[in-house]
Amino acid sequence: MAARPRTLPAAIAPVLVGTAAAAQWLGHLPRWGAFVAALVGSIFIQIGTNLANDYSDAKRGADTTDRLGPVRVTSAGLVTPQRVMTATWIAFAVAVACGIYLATVAGVVILVIGVFSIAAGVLYTGGPRPYGYAGLGEVFVFLFFGLVAVNGSYYAQLEHLDPLPLGLSISVGFLATAILVVNNVRDLETDRRAGKMTSAVRIGRANAVNLYRLLVIGAFLVLPVSLLGGENGSALPLIGLLAAPMAIKPMRAMANHTDGPALNGALAGTGALLGAFSLLVTAGLLISS
Image (cartoon, rainbow, N blue to C red):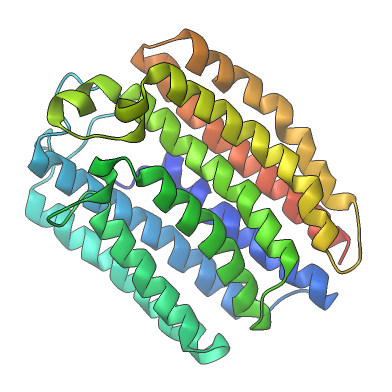
């Protein structure tokens, strides 16, 4: 429960897209070891971040019994805080091990990226001045689950960067950020009472819903522009646009509902949208490689 598996598409999607973009550039399948290490490392950074968030929000009183989201194990007393923190550091240790392997393959820059990603995950709701409580969570997600993860996965294969993964990382980052916007809209009232000044609390529900729309629509608008940076100019990755109808239901839920079940459904739907979009783009990139 504390690992929050519904959020894992945000960790898996950028690695798939970044690696597939590298395969298109190479014209053949990528370094499998680097791909597996990047994928496992990304997943465990996400899990570690979720566990750290569960612990820190409970400590700060943000996860109360009247929240609309799923039960948080620390605040509910299902798991002791000490065990949650132990699990957190185990998850991050797995991620560091993957980073050490990647450093042997693609250089120390990958390990540095991993360390910064872990630090960002811990400081999201932990530390003396958590930036998640200052309305900067969306910036973190876009940066680390979009720009850093896609381009980092590409770099782990080729050890250089190109315009294509940069453009694709914006699309992936927008959809990953949209997941957090749903979460913050759902928890708006309980976050406000706890003093957690997320972007939704700061700009209000209506503006947060508009931000969600802009992020989702923007992801699909950026995709064709991104492909202009591709080496072979293939239009096959445009099949990612086929995922667009999946955005309709969560968009409607965000606009018309304030209850927990509907917004939890929107959260799951946005995660599924990111997953489908990324899988289709990945397939297009690999077929055209």
